[in-house]
Length: 354
Ligand SMILES: Cc1cc2nc3c(=O)[nH]c(=O)nc-3n(C[C@H](O)[C@H](O)[C@H](O)COP(=O)(O)OP(=O)(O)OC[C@H]3O[C@@H](n4cnc5c(N)ncnc54)[C@H](O)[C@@H]3O)c2cc1C
Ligand code: FES
Image: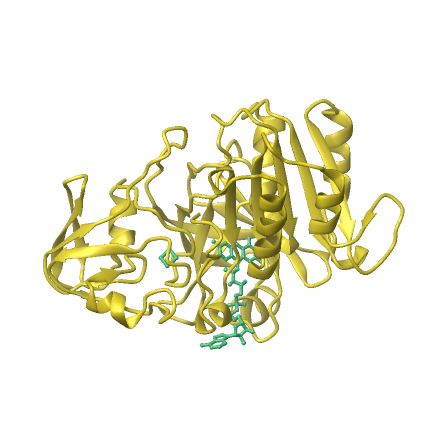
Protein backbone atom coordinates (compact mmCIF):
# COMPACT_ATOMS: atom_id res chain seq x y z
CA UNK A 1 0.00 0.00 0.00
CA UNK A 2 1.40 3.43 -0.91
CA UNK A 3 1.85 5.80 2.04
CA UNK A 4 -0.72 8.57 2.48
CA UNK A 5 -0.05 12.11 3.60
CA UNK A 6 -2.16 15.11 4.54
CA UNK A 7 -1.95 18.11 2.23
CA UNK A 8 -3.24 21.38 3.68
CA UNK A 9 -4.20 23.98 1.10
CA UNK A 10 -3.84 27.59 2.20
CA UNK A 11 -5.40 30.14 2.26
CA UNK A 12 -8.47 27.82 2.24
CA UNK A 13 -7.29 25.87 5.27
CA UNK A 14 -8.67 22.70 3.68
CA UNK A 15 -7.05 19.31 4.17
CA UNK A 16 -6.93 16.45 1.72
CA UNK A 17 -5.37 13.00 1.86
CA UNK A 18 -2.83 12.39 -0.91
CA UNK A 19 -1.09 9.10 -1.72
CA UNK A 20 2.67 9.19 -2.24
CA UNK A 21 2.11 8.10 -5.86
CA UNK A 22 -0.57 10.74 -6.50
CA UNK A 23 -0.05 14.34 -7.55
CA UNK A 24 -1.18 17.06 -5.16
CA UNK A 25 -3.37 18.60 -7.87
CA UNK A 26 -5.07 15.27 -8.53
CA UNK A 27 -5.85 14.74 -4.84
CA UNK A 28 -7.27 18.25 -4.55
CA UNK A 29 -9.40 18.12 -7.71
CA UNK A 30 -10.82 14.72 -6.77
CA UNK A 31 -11.79 16.16 -3.36
CA UNK A 32 -13.52 19.10 -5.05
CA UNK A 33 -10.83 21.59 -4.00
CA UNK A 34 -10.16 23.87 -6.93
CA UNK A 35 -6.53 24.73 -7.66
CA UNK A 36 -5.51 26.73 -10.73
CA UNK A 37 -4.20 24.52 -13.52
CA UNK A 38 -4.06 24.29 -17.29
CA UNK A 39 -1.77 21.68 -18.88
CA UNK A 40 -1.58 19.22 -15.90
CA UNK A 41 1.79 18.01 -17.25
CA UNK A 42 4.32 20.39 -15.62
CA UNK A 43 4.69 22.58 -18.70
CA UNK A 44 2.72 25.82 -18.35
CA UNK A 45 3.47 26.94 -14.75
CA UNK A 46 -0.17 27.94 -14.17
CA UNK A 47 -0.45 25.80 -11.04
CA UNK A 48 2.75 27.08 -9.35
CA UNK A 49 2.36 27.11 -5.58
CA UNK A 50 4.54 27.53 -2.52
CA UNK A 51 5.44 24.67 -0.20
CA UNK A 52 5.10 26.32 3.20
CA UNK A 53 5.87 23.16 5.17
CA UNK A 54 6.88 19.57 4.38
CA UNK A 55 8.63 17.86 1.46
CA UNK A 56 7.53 17.13 -2.09
CA UNK A 57 9.00 15.28 -5.06
CA UNK A 58 8.83 17.79 -7.94
CA UNK A 59 8.25 14.94 -10.39
CA UNK A 60 8.35 15.63 -14.10
CA UNK A 61 8.26 19.43 -13.87
CA UNK A 62 9.77 21.19 -16.87
CA UNK A 63 12.97 22.96 -15.80
CA UNK A 64 11.58 26.05 -17.55
CA UNK A 65 8.20 26.02 -15.82
CA UNK A 66 9.89 25.42 -12.44
CA UNK A 67 13.39 26.83 -12.41
CA UNK A 68 16.13 25.69 -10.03
CA UNK A 69 16.03 28.90 -8.00
CA UNK A 70 12.26 28.51 -7.61
CA UNK A 71 12.71 24.97 -6.30
CA UNK A 72 15.24 26.40 -3.81
CA UNK A 73 12.69 29.05 -2.82
CA UNK A 74 10.12 26.35 -2.01
CA UNK A 75 7.95 26.62 -5.12
CA UNK A 76 6.41 23.55 -6.76
CA UNK A 77 4.02 22.53 -9.55
CA UNK A 78 1.17 20.63 -7.84
CA UNK A 79 0.12 19.02 -11.14
CA UNK A 80 3.28 16.87 -11.09
CA UNK A 81 4.44 17.15 -7.44
CA UNK A 82 3.90 14.25 -5.04
CA UNK A 83 4.09 14.50 -1.25
CA UNK A 84 6.97 12.96 0.69
CA UNK A 85 5.57 14.02 4.07
CA UNK A 86 2.55 15.92 5.35
CA UNK A 87 2.60 19.15 3.36
CA UNK A 88 1.20 22.67 3.59
CA UNK A 89 0.96 24.56 0.29
CA UNK A 90 -0.06 28.13 -0.41
CA UNK A 91 -1.85 28.37 -3.76
CA UNK A 92 -3.30 31.18 -5.82
CA UNK A 93 -6.87 29.97 -5.37
CA UNK A 94 -8.97 32.39 -7.35
CA UNK A 95 -12.20 30.54 -8.05
CA UNK A 96 -14.38 32.05 -10.76
CA UNK A 97 -17.83 32.36 -9.22
CA UNK A 98 -19.56 31.74 -12.55
CA UNK A 99 -17.81 28.41 -13.14
CA UNK A 100 -19.08 25.40 -11.18
CA UNK A 101 -16.43 23.06 -9.77
CA UNK A 102 -16.88 19.44 -10.85
CA UNK A 103 -14.69 16.97 -8.96
CA UNK A 104 -12.38 14.83 -11.07
CA UNK A 105 -13.42 11.18 -11.32
CA UNK A 106 -12.22 8.03 -13.10
CA UNK A 107 -14.19 6.64 -16.03
CA UNK A 108 -14.03 3.72 -18.43
CA UNK A 109 -14.63 4.74 -22.03
CA UNK A 110 -15.62 2.62 -25.02
CA UNK A 111 -14.74 3.85 -28.51
CA UNK A 112 -18.01 4.04 -30.48
CA UNK A 113 -16.82 6.21 -33.37
CA UNK A 114 -13.52 6.90 -35.09
CA UNK A 115 -13.66 9.05 -38.23
CA UNK A 116 -11.16 10.92 -40.37
CA UNK A 117 -12.60 14.44 -40.65
CA UNK A 118 -9.65 16.33 -42.15
CA UNK A 119 -6.00 15.82 -42.95
CA UNK A 120 -4.36 14.06 -39.98
CA UNK A 121 -7.47 14.78 -37.89
CA UNK A 122 -9.77 12.23 -36.30
CA UNK A 123 -13.07 12.59 -34.52
CA UNK A 124 -13.24 10.13 -31.66
CA UNK A 125 -16.52 9.33 -29.90
CA UNK A 126 -16.18 7.67 -26.53
CA UNK A 127 -19.10 6.36 -24.51
CA UNK A 128 -18.49 6.63 -20.78
CA UNK A 129 -19.61 4.11 -18.16
CA UNK A 130 -21.69 6.89 -16.53
CA UNK A 131 -22.55 10.55 -16.95
CA UNK A 132 -19.83 13.18 -16.79
CA UNK A 133 -20.50 16.65 -15.35
CA UNK A 134 -18.21 19.29 -16.84
CA UNK A 135 -18.02 22.87 -18.10
CA UNK A 136 -17.93 23.59 -21.83
CA UNK A 137 -14.24 23.85 -22.76
CA UNK A 138 -12.82 21.37 -20.24
CA UNK A 139 -10.77 18.30 -21.07
CA UNK A 140 -10.15 14.68 -20.05
CA UNK A 141 -6.93 12.85 -19.31
CA UNK A 142 -6.69 9.60 -21.30
CA UNK A 143 -4.48 6.73 -20.17
CA UNK A 144 -2.39 5.57 -23.12
CA UNK A 145 -2.72 1.75 -23.34
CA UNK A 146 0.54 -0.16 -23.03
CA UNK A 147 2.31 2.76 -21.34
CA UNK A 148 1.59 2.61 -17.60
CA UNK A 149 1.33 6.02 -16.00
CA UNK A 150 1.36 7.87 -19.34
CA UNK A 151 -1.59 10.18 -19.98
CA UNK A 152 -2.55 12.58 -22.74
CA UNK A 153 -5.18 15.28 -22.57
CA UNK A 154 -8.00 15.92 -25.06
CA UNK A 155 -10.77 18.50 -24.89
CA UNK A 156 -14.44 17.67 -25.19
CA UNK A 157 -16.04 19.11 -28.34
CA UNK A 158 -19.50 18.12 -27.10
CA UNK A 159 -21.53 20.39 -24.82
CA UNK A 160 -22.17 19.41 -21.18
CA UNK A 161 -25.77 18.49 -22.08
CA UNK A 162 -24.28 15.44 -23.83
CA UNK A 163 -22.96 13.87 -20.67
CA UNK A 164 -22.49 10.23 -21.66
CA UNK A 165 -20.58 10.40 -24.96
CA UNK A 166 -17.41 12.47 -25.25
CA UNK A 167 -16.39 13.77 -28.66
CA UNK A 168 -12.65 14.34 -29.03
CA UNK A 169 -10.97 15.88 -32.06
CA UNK A 170 -7.41 14.63 -32.34
CA UNK A 171 -4.63 15.93 -34.60
CA UNK A 172 -1.86 13.47 -35.49
CA UNK A 173 1.59 14.44 -34.23
CA UNK A 174 4.30 12.66 -36.23
CA UNK A 175 6.17 10.40 -33.82
CA UNK A 176 3.63 11.12 -31.07
CA UNK A 177 3.01 8.37 -28.55
CA UNK A 178 -0.77 8.77 -28.23
CA UNK A 179 -1.63 9.95 -31.73
CA UNK A 180 0.76 8.21 -34.15
CA UNK A 181 1.15 5.29 -31.75
CA UNK A 182 -2.49 4.77 -30.76
CA UNK A 183 -5.37 6.93 -32.05
CA UNK A 184 -4.08 6.85 -35.64
CA UNK A 185 -2.79 3.26 -35.62
CA UNK A 186 -4.19 0.61 -33.26
CA UNK A 187 -7.33 2.25 -31.87
CA UNK A 188 -10.53 0.52 -32.99
CA UNK A 189 -14.26 0.82 -32.37
CA UNK A 190 -15.17 -1.29 -29.31
CA UNK A 191 -11.85 -0.69 -27.57
CA UNK A 192 -12.02 0.27 -23.90
CA UNK A 193 -9.61 2.51 -22.01
CA UNK A 194 -9.40 4.49 -18.78
CA UNK A 195 -9.80 8.25 -18.60
CA UNK A 196 -10.30 10.84 -15.87
CA UNK A 197 -11.67 14.35 -15.64
CA UNK A 198 -12.91 16.95 -16.04
CA UNK A 199 -9.84 19.21 -15.97
CA UNK A 200 -9.02 22.74 -17.01
CA UNK A 201 -10.18 26.30 -16.65
CA UNK A 202 -10.58 27.24 -20.33
CA UNK A 203 -14.36 27.46 -20.10
CA UNK A 204 -17.19 29.60 -21.35
CA UNK A 205 -17.80 32.33 -18.79
CA UNK A 206 -21.56 32.76 -18.71
CA UNK A 207 -21.35 35.91 -16.61
CA UNK A 208 -19.39 37.82 -19.29
CA UNK A 209 -21.91 39.81 -21.25
CA UNK A 210 -19.46 41.29 -23.79
CA UNK A 211 -19.43 39.87 -27.34
CA UNK A 212 -16.85 37.10 -27.66
CA UNK A 213 -14.22 36.65 -30.35
CA UNK A 214 -13.11 33.01 -30.52
CA UNK A 215 -9.92 32.02 -32.32
CA UNK A 216 -9.23 28.33 -33.05
CA UNK A 217 -6.22 26.77 -34.75
CA UNK A 218 -6.28 23.08 -35.75
CA UNK A 219 -7.99 20.90 -33.15
CA UNK A 220 -7.97 23.91 -30.86
CA UNK A 221 -11.47 24.06 -32.29
CA UNK A 222 -12.63 21.27 -29.94
CA UNK A 223 -13.18 23.20 -26.67
CA UNK A 224 -14.44 26.24 -28.57
CA UNK A 225 -16.88 24.00 -30.42
CA UNK A 226 -18.21 22.81 -27.04
CA UNK A 227 -18.64 26.42 -25.92
CA UNK A 228 -20.48 27.45 -29.08
CA UNK A 229 -22.85 24.44 -28.96
CA UNK A 230 -23.46 25.10 -25.26
CA UNK A 231 -24.21 28.78 -25.88
CA UNK A 232 -26.39 28.39 -28.98
CA UNK A 233 -28.06 25.00 -28.67
CA UNK A 234 -28.39 24.70 -24.90
CA UNK A 235 -29.03 28.36 -24.08
CA UNK A 236 -25.76 28.53 -22.10
CA UNK A 237 -25.13 32.16 -23.03
CA UNK A 238 -26.93 34.80 -25.02
CA UNK A 239 -23.85 36.83 -25.98
CA UNK A 240 -22.75 37.43 -29.53
CA UNK A 241 -20.04 34.99 -30.68
CA UNK A 242 -17.69 35.19 -33.64
CA UNK A 243 -15.58 32.15 -34.51
CA UNK A 244 -12.31 32.55 -36.44
CA UNK A 245 -11.22 29.06 -37.51
CA UNK A 246 -7.78 28.83 -39.10
CA UNK A 247 -6.15 26.18 -41.26
CA UNK A 248 -3.54 26.05 -43.99
CA UNK A 249 -5.76 24.63 -46.74
CA UNK A 250 -9.28 23.28 -47.11
CA UNK A 251 -7.97 19.76 -46.52
CA UNK A 252 -7.08 20.66 -42.93
CA UNK A 253 -10.45 22.30 -42.18
CA UNK A 254 -13.34 20.40 -40.62
CA UNK A 255 -16.87 21.01 -39.28
CA UNK A 256 -17.33 23.86 -41.79
CA UNK A 257 -20.89 22.71 -42.53
CA UNK A 258 -21.74 22.57 -38.83
CA UNK A 259 -20.69 26.17 -38.19
CA UNK A 260 -22.08 27.46 -41.47
CA UNK A 261 -25.42 25.96 -40.48
CA UNK A 262 -25.26 27.44 -36.97
CA UNK A 263 -24.46 30.88 -38.42
CA UNK A 264 -27.56 30.60 -40.65
CA UNK A 265 -29.76 29.46 -37.75
CA UNK A 266 -28.50 32.07 -35.27
CA UNK A 267 -27.69 35.11 -37.43
CA UNK A 268 -28.10 37.55 -34.53
CA UNK A 269 -25.82 35.61 -32.21
CA UNK A 270 -23.20 33.76 -34.23
CA UNK A 271 -20.78 34.76 -37.00
CA UNK A 272 -18.44 32.26 -38.64
CA UNK A 273 -15.13 33.25 -40.28
CA UNK A 274 -13.21 30.23 -41.64
CA UNK A 275 -9.73 31.29 -42.82
CA UNK A 276 -7.20 29.55 -45.10
CA UNK A 277 -3.62 30.78 -45.01
CA UNK A 278 -2.20 28.87 -48.02
CA UNK A 279 -5.14 28.55 -50.40
CA UNK A 280 -7.98 30.62 -51.84
CA UNK A 281 -11.45 29.09 -51.80
CA UNK A 282 -15.04 30.27 -52.04
CA UNK A 283 -16.56 31.01 -48.65
CA UNK A 284 -13.20 31.26 -46.90
CA UNK A 285 -11.21 34.34 -45.93
CA UNK A 286 -7.64 34.24 -47.21
CA UNK A 287 -4.79 34.77 -44.77
CA UNK A 288 -3.60 33.84 -41.33
CA UNK A 289 -6.46 33.74 -38.89
CA UNK A 290 -4.82 36.52 -36.89
CA UNK A 291 -4.49 38.76 -39.96
CA UNK A 292 -8.13 38.24 -40.93
CA UNK A 293 -9.19 39.00 -37.36
CA UNK A 294 -7.06 42.16 -37.31
CA UNK A 295 -8.46 43.35 -40.64
CA UNK A 296 -12.06 42.75 -39.51
CA UNK A 297 -11.83 44.88 -36.36
CA UNK A 298 -10.41 48.40 -36.02
CA UNK A 299 -10.71 47.77 -32.26
CA UNK A 300 -11.86 44.94 -30.00
CA UNK A 301 -12.36 47.12 -26.94
CA UNK A 302 -15.44 45.85 -25.11
CA UNK A 303 -15.01 42.24 -26.29
CA UNK A 304 -13.88 39.03 -24.61
CA UNK A 305 -11.38 36.71 -26.35
CA UNK A 306 -11.13 32.91 -26.28
CA UNK A 307 -8.06 31.44 -27.97
CA UNK A 308 -7.03 27.80 -28.38
CA UNK A 309 -4.55 25.85 -30.46
CA UNK A 310 -0.83 25.17 -30.86
CA UNK A 311 1.26 27.46 -28.60
CA UNK A 312 2.73 29.63 -31.44
CA UNK A 313 -0.75 30.30 -32.84
CA UNK A 314 -2.07 31.15 -29.37
CA UNK A 315 0.83 33.55 -28.87
CA UNK A 316 0.18 35.27 -32.22
CA UNK A 317 -3.54 35.58 -31.45
CA UNK A 318 -2.80 37.08 -28.04
CA UNK A 319 -0.63 39.74 -29.64
CA UNK A 320 -3.35 40.55 -32.16
CA UNK A 321 -6.08 40.75 -29.53
CA UNK A 322 -3.98 42.95 -27.28
CA UNK A 323 -3.00 45.22 -30.17
CA UNK A 324 -6.76 45.68 -30.71
CA UNK A 325 -7.13 46.88 -27.11
CA UNK A 326 -8.23 43.72 -25.36
CA UNK A 327 -6.80 43.51 -21.84
CA UNK A 328 -5.27 40.31 -20.42
CA UNK A 329 -8.19 39.91 -18.00
CA UNK A 330 -10.50 39.73 -21.03
CA UNK A 331 -8.62 36.92 -22.80
CA UNK A 332 -9.04 33.21 -21.97
CA UNK A 333 -6.59 30.79 -23.54
CA UNK A 334 -5.65 27.14 -23.85
CA UNK A 335 -2.27 26.08 -25.23
CA UNK A 336 -2.17 22.55 -26.64
CA UNK A 337 1.28 21.81 -25.20
CA UNK A 338 2.82 18.42 -25.98
CA UNK A 339 5.90 16.61 -24.67
CA UNK A 340 8.14 18.33 -27.22
CA UNK A 341 6.95 21.75 -26.01
CA UNK A 342 7.65 20.65 -22.46
CA UNK A 343 11.22 19.65 -23.30
CA UNK A 344 11.67 22.94 -25.15
CA UNK A 345 10.36 24.94 -22.19
CA UNK A 346 6.84 25.73 -23.31
CA UNK A 347 5.91 28.02 -20.44
CA UNK A 348 3.00 30.31 -21.22
CA UNK A 349 3.46 33.67 -22.69
CA UNK A 350 4.76 36.41 -20.43
CA UNK A 351 2.14 38.55 -22.19
CA UNK A 352 -0.68 37.22 -20.11
CA UNK A 353 -1.21 35.28 -16.93
CA UNK A 354 -3.94 32.88 -17.94
C1 LIG B 1 -5.06 21.24 -22.00
C2 LIG B 1 -4.75 20.51 -23.28
C3 LIG B 1 -5.80 20.09 -24.10
C4 LIG B 1 -5.52 19.44 -25.31
N1 LIG B 1 -6.55 19.09 -26.13
C5 LIG B 1 -6.27 18.54 -27.35
C6 LIG B 1 -7.32 18.24 -28.28
O1 LIG B 1 -8.51 18.44 -28.01
N2 LIG B 1 -6.98 17.74 -29.49
C7 LIG B 1 -5.66 17.50 -29.84
O2 LIG B 1 -5.41 17.05 -30.98
N3 LIG B 1 -4.66 17.76 -28.96
C8 LIG B 1 -4.93 18.25 -27.74
N4 LIG B 1 -3.91 18.50 -26.86
C9 LIG B 1 -2.55 18.00 -27.19
C10 LIG B 1 -2.46 16.52 -26.72
O3 LIG B 1 -2.63 16.45 -25.32
C11 LIG B 1 -1.12 15.86 -27.05
O4 LIG B 1 -0.07 16.62 -26.53
C12 LIG B 1 -0.92 15.68 -28.54
O5 LIG B 1 -1.98 14.92 -29.08
C13 LIG B 1 0.41 14.94 -28.83
O6 LIG B 1 0.41 13.73 -28.12
P1 LIG B 1 1.29 12.51 -28.59
O7 LIG B 1 1.37 11.54 -27.46
O8 LIG B 1 0.85 12.00 -29.90
O9 LIG B 1 2.73 13.18 -28.83
P2 LIG B 1 3.97 13.21 -27.80
O10 LIG B 1 4.44 11.85 -27.48
O11 LIG B 1 3.61 14.09 -26.67
O12 LIG B 1 5.04 13.90 -28.72
C14 LIG B 1 4.82 15.19 -29.23
C15 LIG B 1 6.07 15.65 -29.97
O13 LIG B 1 7.12 15.84 -29.02
C16 LIG B 1 8.23 15.00 -29.34
N5 LIG B 1 8.74 14.55 -28.03
C17 LIG B 1 8.19 13.61 -27.22
N6 LIG B 1 8.91 13.49 -26.08
C18 LIG B 1 9.94 14.38 -26.20
C19 LIG B 1 11.03 14.72 -25.36
N7 LIG B 1 11.20 14.15 -24.17
N8 LIG B 1 11.90 15.67 -25.80
C20 LIG B 1 11.73 16.27 -27.00
N9 LIG B 1 10.71 15.98 -27.84
C21 LIG B 1 9.82 15.05 -27.43
C22 LIG B 1 7.67 13.91 -30.22
O14 LIG B 1 8.64 13.39 -31.11
C23 LIG B 1 6.60 14.64 -30.98
O15 LIG B 1 7.10 15.35 -32.08
C24 LIG B 1 -4.17 19.16 -25.67
C25 LIG B 1 -3.12 19.56 -24.81
C26 LIG B 1 -3.41 20.23 -23.65
C27 LIG B 1 -2.26 20.67 -22.77
S1 FES C 1 -0.95 22.91 -14.79
FE1 FES C 1 0.86 22.58 -13.66
S2 FES C 1 2.42 23.25 -15.00
FE2 FES C 1 0.62 23.40 -16.21
